[in-house]
Image 1: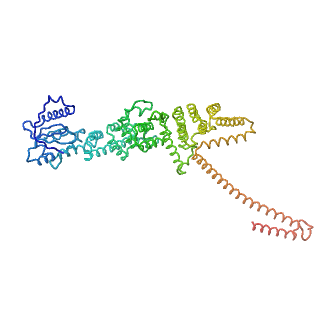
Image 2: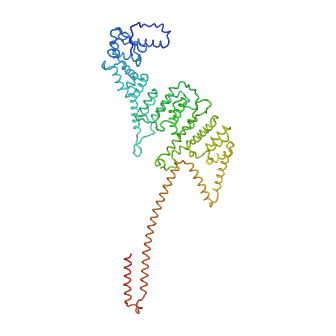
Image 3: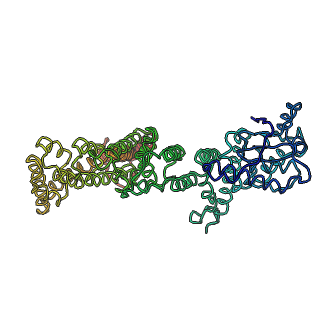
Length: 630
């Protein structure tokens, strides 16, 4: 609100100013500079009749130019028309003394340039002073609004600069929709730039088809560096608007990485696990806000940001004691793509008291649980979308193999820690399913390191730990080492020797003669097939059974078709056999009848006797009868 003050002496003793504190000295210096600037453009031949105080600055001005443009000053003067108003103090004026000076110049008709560095202040001060069209045509408010709409909102760099100026003008800049208009303009401009860049990457292939050249450099993300100067709350609103506009997740991820590195690289240990820089935990509110905001803005798509960046954010969240929801979200994201992580990523330092472990084992365990649950959820999907594959292993099975090697290396890295409890070590080892490891050499190595570092471990705990190892899945070198390892329990050494004996027996059986190879090969095939099925996941076993079932169905269909063909051939053969047998019987029957003499033998062969004539007639009748039968 404006404060009306009676006229008093405004002459300051500049010699005594040296004894004041720094703040008063700064305010007086600002007032002096404002007065000097004011004397350069006000009417020198007309005595001032009103003094305006703004944030320590003093302006000796005239009422008429001010009341002709400003509705707020006109109301103040009108309310105190009876009394002589000579001094007015404007409290909480947006932009301070410098912005009020520009507004006063506008009231006096002095030209000045509206730029992206002062347009936000001019919009706010014109609203505060009520410099609208209601009191004067083409007033400061309309001029600033026109520049904001026609110039600033069509240029991304200007919008960013205006947003920077709005950081000290909130919430008034938000009420005037300056912030929202700039944010919408930035999102629209970035989206249009990406579309234009995508069209520029289109080209025709050798076959004449139109495709996008992925190797060409994308120039549509040049705005990433410009947005890194915005305050975190405004940056969050810009990123949200870009997501709604359809900006690529990779571009949003690149912008988040760039912003986080600029805001958090002061703490080198956040991004470098080997760093030993001491962190002042009392001044981490801003960093905590940055981490939580960036995590909330991460795209849902995988690989939109590097997994190393996710681990860096997780280290920051753990060290800065961010919210539980923030850390769980990061652990879930990392677990969904853990197969591309490295050992250095998993080595998250423990920021707790000195008596705890060197590395944050609990966080890694939760990440592994997220990975295992994701694999189980994929197993529950529809058969048509999961198991219909010609490849022997699904991508999730390959991811399991990679993660199993990563976990074994991680166990070997944390095993020498004297403060690492057996329960935590076993929890990490047991997180993955049994079919994730085809070879147990890495797990055996990690357990051996743990036993060496914890020599006082009871025998019962040693047996419990060694039960994690499937000694049948050890390589020949690892089995030879385990057979002579004195740190292993006696029961484990016996198992190693037993499996080594079976392996030696199979090797000897394979060297027999050819006559003895068949049963040996059959036995070895059964062993290898059982080992392969044990190494395969239930999903892959089910897929293999489905393929075998389809092959058996096809073979059964072929056998049925062949059986039908054989039945048809059999019917035809029976018919042919019936025809041939009837004709042979009739011919033999006629010969026999012709050989018989019913009336005695003829004395003369050349004469045509009645008996021969009757034979011919009978044979013709029989032939006709057979033909009609056929």
